[in-house]
Length: 401
Image (cartoon, rainbow, N blue to C red):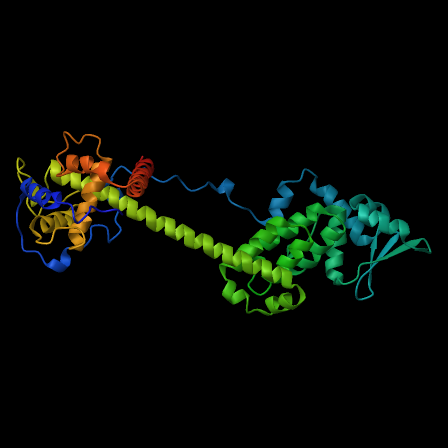
């Protein structure tokens, strides 16, 4: 913050006029208690007793329901129809396809159902060899139970919740490979509902990127950023580092960017606190000079006494600062840190005041006249400070309203 020139001859005389404009009831103060007005963050919201009540919690109808109910409620297919298709799959009546799984076992299916459910499977079935009226297709690299749950879903969209949770990664890969969007949505929902852990989040991230699941990828990245130190020491991270160094570099950049954004947010929060404190100091200064408070005030006002509570949070600190400023022997800026702060507050008020001719704050009109002697650089800095204090004051009013 810009300050007044310590070599200006008007400082000593203006200091005398400042002292003469106050009725100060002297008390024994500890010099260590005279701290800068803005050192401890404070807010004037505590004095506002008209804060509106928060909105009610969402009703039960808005809460999330179980996965099994969620899928069924979105379907208009009668339960009997689903049971019929499920029975057709389980009994394999009239089947013409054998699906060979990883353990060499087979699952009976119907080519018309598989072709209608997936264009990818339709192409595979067209190229499959026919032996004794049966087509044979292989699904390698996936456990038998996962393939069974996958084929069953193609028939009736039915599934066992435990089976989906147990083989969710395999089912997600199958749903993407064979283009089954409804099953992919189920798998992503299961993964988002607490299935992710610090040990498997790297594997899920790589699978989500390969399976075109951007929302799941975003959740995985956010989880990694939230606990990067722990996740970067897991076995999954070490394997990914060797197999996919590009992904490791991308994740490291995301962590650095997230940390930078966090630091920037904290910096802005701290700056806003300072501007709010300056606004409180301006209100307290005007309150002291116009109305008087406790042990200090204008000469034409009766003091209220030190036991009276004040609704201005910065009033007590500013009161000690004014008392020190009126009696300090080295009042020039640069000679005393407390006096320098007082000069700055007086000049800030003068720049924010719109009625200098009627203002009761000491030296207000005097600072208005001295503004013309400042450099353009100092003038720009003061204007920026004033604009930010006013903006903080408006945001506070908006929040209170």
